[in-house]
Image (cartoon, rainbow, N blue to C red; front, side, top):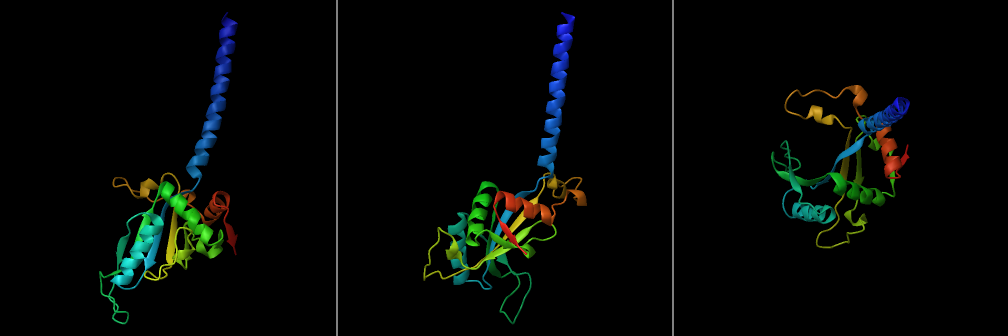
Length: 196
């Protein structure tokens, strides 16, 4: 009777150690794998007024989210820009919406991105020259054609440390997202071809 109990205990401890090893490997994979924090879409018009309103409607139609006006930081008399004047609009997408939009945006570029579009912190920026390249959009002569800049911000779990209010810290270099990790992430998840 006691030998049976001992054998059962051994089997359960062996199973537990195996599951602990698997769990620790999965945890490492999750902790060190990069993910998309947000996708920011920006249209810079350079002036307030009718063109800015048209750009806002284009962004709202593409993303399904209300855009925010971007304001100029300095005064430039040559361009006719005053400080705090609205000169563009942007939308920030997170989660599932960001993923869906990014797939559409990459399709407009035929899933090809230049290597210089990735920065050293692992972020990605690229442009779409014409909003009518999106499948849902058609040319409207009343609106015209607008290009846009798309910025993808990458992070790893644990980046909250640099944003929290109490005991804020810098992210150590070993935990930061690198350019190579981001390229690998996009080639595996989105089938992106990186052109050198």
